[in-house]
Length: 141
Image 1 (cartoon, helix red, strand yellow):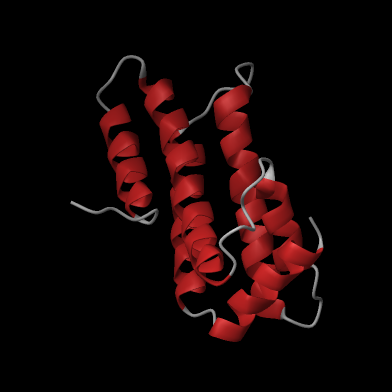
Image 2 (cartoon, rainbow, N blue to C red):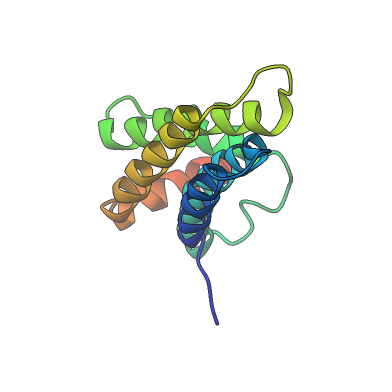
């Protein structure tokens, strides 16, 4: 069976739903935030690697992808995806690393909503837009 990064959004929703009946529900909510982010990041990564397979070869490409989406102020659609992905990244980092701040059900649901929005936006990106992102990432390592 083959899976796609977008399938992580289903996993995120399952974790979020499962958290309702669990005493240690925050761990599931944190996992939901993380999977929600990776559903969107992964879908963009697959689309870009189709054009430029080596762009993601090095580590630390998450911020680089956000920068690539936001660098062209004339493409409002790409900038909007970049802003939303950056919000998701911030939520994922809090959920994964910031143990002092609790993650609530509403916080996890916001991650799910944002990820679904980014995934919808990715579906309507054109080939030239994806190409523009890939070329910018390759030219600005």
